[in-house]
Amino acid sequence: MKVCIYARKSTGKLSQNNTIENQIKICKRYADKNNFEVVDIKVDVGTGRDDLNRFEIQELVDESIKGKYECVLMKGISRLYRNTLKGLELIEKFDMFGIRVITIEEKFDSNKSRYSHGALDVSKITMYLMFSEMESNKIGERVKLTQIEKAKMGMWNNPTRVPFGYRYNRETKKLEKEPESASTISLIFKMYEGGNSIKEIIESLEKENKKPPRGKAWRDDTIRYILRNHVYKGNIFYRTDSDKEEVENAHEPIIENKRFDAIQLKINSRAKSKGKNNQRSKLMGMVKCSSCGSSMTYRYYHYNGEYYYYCIGYIKNGKSYCSSHKIKADALEQEVRQKTSKYLNKINNIKELKNKKLIIKNKISRLNTEADMLSNLLIENKVTKKHFQQGIYHLTNKIDILMNEKVEIEQKIRRCNFLSNFVNQYDSIIDVLLENRTLLENLIESVSVSNTGVFVTFK
Ligand SMILES: [Zn+2]
Image: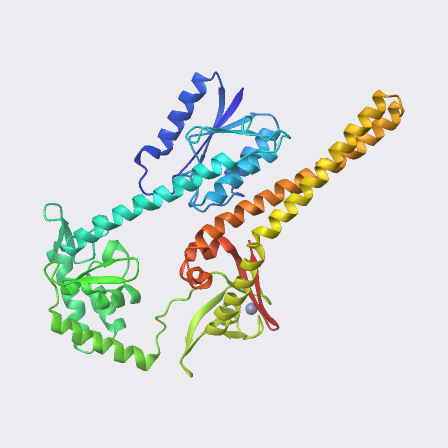
């Protein structure tokens, strides 16, 4: 059998033995053992977005339709797709085009996992994927706990990202001053204390040829970030589930506590007078203007101290391009809240879906009985062969249509189960939703704002 190996950059962090090379090696070994002929290897090195319309997948489907291979071989999909549903959808997509799918880790083979009527049976692999998803969450949890313990002792948890002004000491696992960049940091604080603006600070740093962090140019937000970073008074942060904890005196400060705190007050009072936008939008990147199709951006409106979404098309190109319509962030979020809640209630109606499935099942069995009766009539010579064939053709057509409907409903039920797994753990679906960006992105395709209202498109 001609197979194509499909490998993809793993989405998980804990995946040294899941490198692309390793995936290919394991697949090749499997192919050898089973006398499969590997005719191609597709490596998907995309951005890590679980997008099933990505080029590599499309190409795979196209080529197998043309007959280049009959089977896709993967090491496993559980760690390749961040989300269980997408992994399943990939399998279903391949199956829909008649491509056999084998995933070694999950021991899944689409040729073998089928219901008696021929539809693809993904119940086992669904369970497998859900468990592995839960397991990887647990591993993440354990890693987080040791990181918290280390942070409490003043250790720096991210050696690959050390703040400018410091270096990482591998022995103590703490930060220590790096003389050259540390002197730049103290200069920045000193200048700000002395009343210099950010722009003036940048000019002076450039004039004195001070190296910026990571070799890039000095920028406004770099300076602002430095001025606010508690790491420079010797503190570090760690995240727990509910909030952020600060550990004091974790390492040697560059700016003493008192001076640092005084500077914070200064920054706050300057920011207040300017009305800085420092709040983050929950729907960032999802909101579109329905008149011109541009994204809408989240901005602070200093006349009334509220946050709004504005059409970027209008901001960039002016009135001739699009109207200045804006919408209050609170109001928009409220709309999305309500619409999502309604949508969830609608799709989460497993009972109704199960009823529908039952009705279809009954219809199918009735049609099967009819077909049996027709066969009996033929045996007893009570109908002509032509009449029989017409009848059977008619019945199998009907059964096929119902079968497809049933598969669709089963998919919906799986999706519902999956969602309610998440949702049942919390009292209020909506709070979880708005706090959990991944979940939000899994549900909402886009939010579109027009003069007549807000439209939410769900996936
Ligand atoms: Zn617009």
